[in-house]
Length: 161
Image 1 (tube, rainbow, N blue to C red):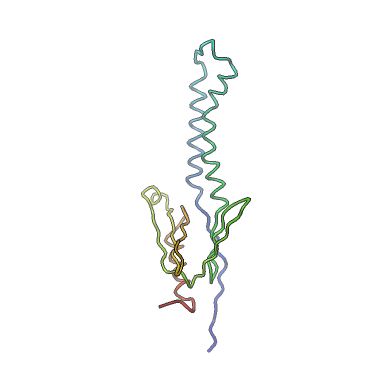
Image 2: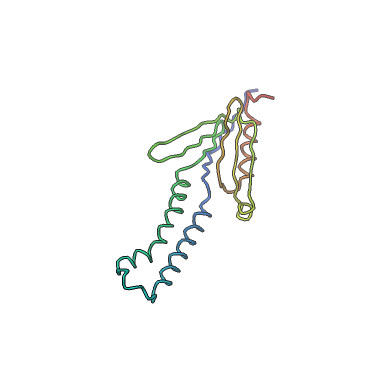
């Protein structure tokens, strides 16, 4: 009887944006609080008005943190195909790592307490014959993704016993 190969639709996974959105909200609150705190403050006459504005807006530099995380999250993805995993990252210089599902030996989900509260976790994939594993940080439903990768790995022909 011929072997039946079922082709699954590719599943694209990206790191969650939950923590990035919370970072934006926290920075916005800090910026608004600093502006409110500087309104009506008696500034020493030696500080020029233009410097006062810069001092009040200085906390806005904190926006660099969530913007950096936002870009990193949107530029990182793993695509699960029926016979391989493709991990891509980068914008101007792009790195793509392809892992054959048949070579996957271990899939580990690690969830810190804060991650468990929000239903996210880090997914680590170890493969045969490679010295370094692959860790995808802060993905949603990490155990379901790990189970799917394990299921694909177990059904692949050529899998070592």
